[in-house]
Length: 80
Image (spheres, rainbow, N blue to C red):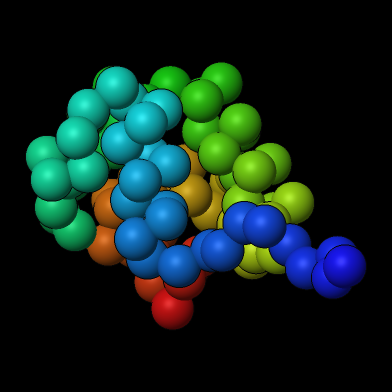
């Protein structure tokens, strides 16, 4: 049996993860959405960063994402 990672870090999964953290539908997010204004707090952001780093996205960095909390920027950083 293969030991491949079960988490795929792509744009769709990043959007789904963020939407789940916010308790909203992924369809409610646009690339222009400011995620802090949408209700994402630092605790949930840190949880997402840990999830994405564990899933193979070492470029997911709390400081980088917190300084530019716009979905489109995050997608370019995490799942280019």
